[in-house]
Length: 333
Ligand code: LMR
Picture (tube, helix red, strand yellow):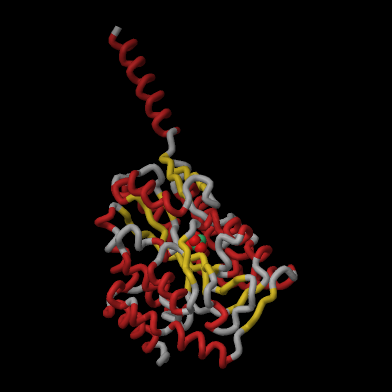
């Protein structure tokens, strides 16, 4: 009798054990861009690495192109645990209450990506991530995209050309100030609504790296693109803090390794993806792609650099100074 009950207990435990082993940990990863963008490709790479390195004990469910959550909903969904991972633009943390992230939106704050990398991979980036934790969010990595171009249905050569234009922005007070400094009328709009907003004239123009302008087909409804590189757009890969801390330590460690390699990949492909998409926009003939003259660049800087001062009270003068010191460390004035 005893041997029969032992066998039954053993059988049940094996079945439960097998069932438990078969149920992977699900990580819903939502983002708002197309798959064939730097962020879209990096998310795919993270999925591959994470599932491989956890031997299938984790399954990453990707929801690109706002298919699960749009701009306004995704951060709250993460905090509620309805989704476990996001990679929002650094311009989208103001509404959460961490307005210091808008330092990344300041016109001309990064002379090049080397300075950007010193910031994101150094103490400044870590300090910014620490500010997310009281909001139930943990920052895992910074993913690159690129410097932004401007687009509209009129030539944008000088600051005066922006006067009166309704320009779509991400939810960032710095970007609001940027376009007001150009005499334009900034309008916050979810990324998923921008193409239609441009097509219908709800907004006249926008800014983004070429990879977004191309993959969302915005260039088809924007006759003029100016390669201004006036500002930067990148990402913070973030997770629900409680979910992350409750993962089995070996799983968390494997995911951290996967994220490190996915980040390396993201930052390695971003510039080329943007260069190739800008070339595709030019080749399409749908938009006139214009490069500023040195004199025009100087007039844009004169109009936009004061935004660094006017937004210092919001972002923190010390934070702005610390980034400008990183530029100086690489020889920039
Ligand atoms: C935007 O809203 O313009 C960008 O943040 C979209 C993105 O995530 O690249």
